[in-house]
Length: 256
Image (cartoon, rainbow, N blue to C red; front, side, top):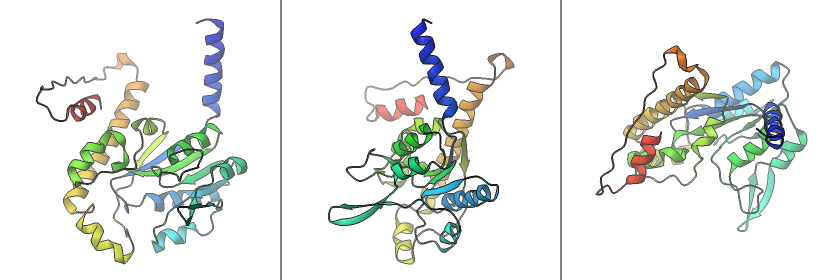
């Protein structure tokens, strides 16, 4: 390693050491309790003397979740006009300026409106982490890029808002919260039950969520456990027929 590489390596280590911690609550579907648990944790941190603030949270009108927002410091949202309507977005710059120890950021896969600094909220979170602020966030399994085809096969619905699998690899902790709960406002419930929330869909998405958490734990073991401890490492070979209509899906699944 030459002098320039050595200096860059040191700078990279220094930057990493100053980076905020990253915790993700991952669930099989909306309404399983991710936001609720994040807010519970925020109250616990606040009682412990940690400077934790809410950067963005979406309660979807759930009474129990809204009750947990009370008493937590809130960073005001950024108001903008988009296509003739006033919309509220997470205020990235305000979070960076206030610089709390920990910030709660909901809806990780959200797409920001045009004119925002970043296209996606997960990119905002990366900026927050790089600024040395720890982040607690949440995402549903259907928003992972690597599972896009699997989710579409199960539900028949294409998920447009997605995050790269690499975002999960940055997380210091993955938490699955597969708990039943109230989901949408009454007028939306039947539509949800007839489409994405069909019982057969939920069971298969739950399986994907559990597999994803298991995969991340396995990767952490592979990177953290010494190779001479007898840990068995598996390898997969994918044979793709020339008649295969979805080779990308096969390649992606083998890579995962």
